[in-house]
Image 1 (cartoon, rainbow over the protein chains, first blue to last red):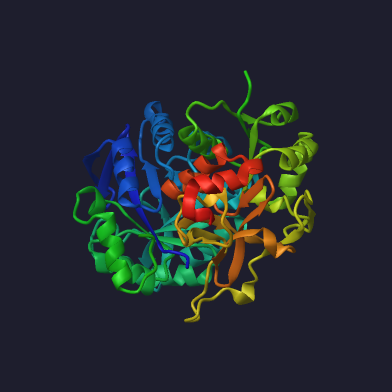
Image 2 (image 1 turned 90 degrees about the vertical axis):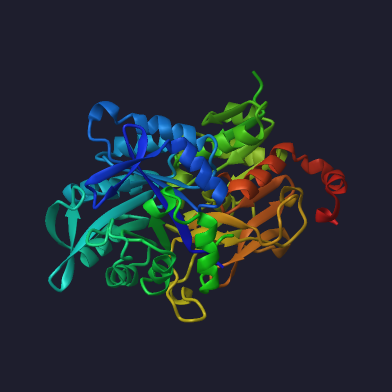
Length: 251
Length: 228
């Protein structure tokens, strides 16, 4: 049976892994290649790198990191952050990424999702959706949750699927960094509205949150950063817990 | 320089992962990513990967004049098809109603929408993406050292249906059983991505780079129970 995926996320800036709390304060959690190797050995099902480097001078650092990781870690690697054009997708794939995640540019230029998936295949195009509850629905935000777009998140998810996204990385901006669990209603609303896999993200604080994301949020994969980086929980421990709660995992 | 292993590049997706994984298991071999039919012809063994859509794949193969080189390689030397590189070995794909290479008898079909739910009624997503159990339907030198039911990484929306069941080397469930590995002479082809399937994937690739199809019995003798 297909296993639910556990995906550690490494936020990278200037070549180092950090994790923002509500995307504002950043802590240095180490060397990306070393962390990737450790997660691979621990049984992570995939790895996601989000490049949050602000300066364009240092943007190519992520390419060197991906090249180094891809030479020794043989599980799927997703890279996102600052992807604005088909050429950015190509550079990341050539460096060894298996999937490229598009966030803000999917909003400003939805055609990029179509062009990139037409060119390289839907299987390598992930659209990241940052959503926040507004009244009785969820709205898409960009720029780390600062800019409202007016787009309904569920409708946006369907549109991204129709343009060729192979997967959606869904982050609740209300929950990100809070350790209070995924926004399960949001996750379920989007997962049930599309046929492509959903990665739930934003708010994981304990093991039960991951179980809930799958069972109640209908997520196909769960992504977390700080609970792994700071050693609160190991990948093996997470998978064992999920299996005990009736979730198929790769052990 | 003689080429030990050619990875065929026909412009369909990222081959970096495939070549890196093969270099990892065959550090002394010369591994070349190529779209040159002459290099494919010269290579000792051939890996035929591929991602994307079947119509594009067939078009790009022909645009590069690779069709005959692929057919010749698949008939004469150790040949590993991966993902789309497995599907287009068959006769026809439902994806874009595409005539394929016709090296293996059978067709390629999409996961049917009406079948995509589990026993509890939960919707199953397409593409089939992630780690699934691979059941070995026959002993084969490429399975040596890999446990029955080991998990491999998949990402695909179509699957092959061979008309000769004897060539089915492996199957998986989503939610029904589907063929995910075939073996025919010097051809071995898989729907999953060994280059992304961690240790078991590297084991399969390592088996491929030392596989001598003509000496299959010898390989089985050396590997012990796995081929018994």
